[in-house]
Length: 123
Image 1 (cartoon, one colour):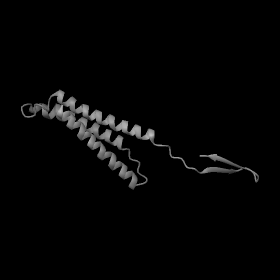
Image 2: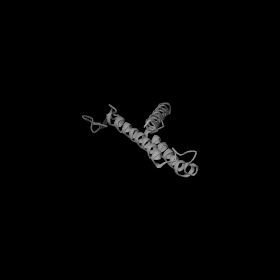
Image 3: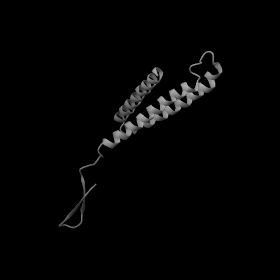
Image 4: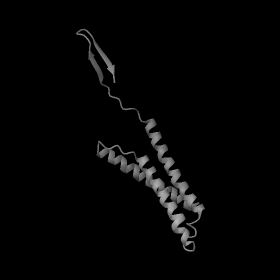
């Protein structure tokens, strides 16, 4: 259980770093549109694949040296932390987009229809 909590806290710390870096990059570069949650999910997926390769290919050959890391139970414990952190990232993104008001401009489109009237259409 302590390994699970440590892995979960470290994954959430990495999530915080990725979200902060993407937010900073979006602020500094106006044309950038980086989505930190999607980037983190991609990184967590890659880490999960590499973890599976290490567990079942590398650690499995050296059972005497890496016995506690090469078990399938240890892998599924680590995989659970990756999945929980990815779910937290996507939930954070969903909650952030849900509470943020839509960007609207207060300018109205004015159509000149005749010299006597004007139509104002909100955009």
